[in-house]
Length: 46
Image (cartoon, rainbow, N blue to C red; front, side):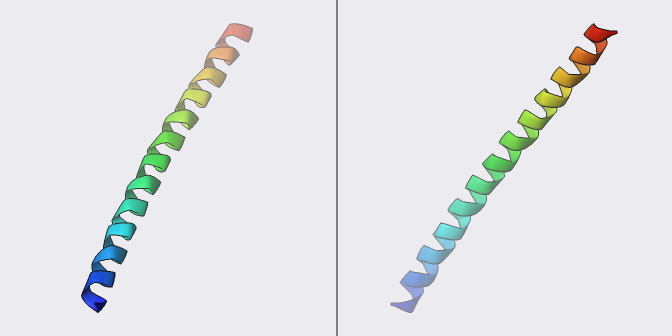
């Protein structure tokens, strides 16, 4: 019984790590695109 619970917990941890990894990648991409837009706006104003 205990072995099954441990396997289930490991699966949950792996899933949550995957979700956090995807969220991290998405936030990095969004930050880069926002920075690029800000730099483009700076160039246009000059």
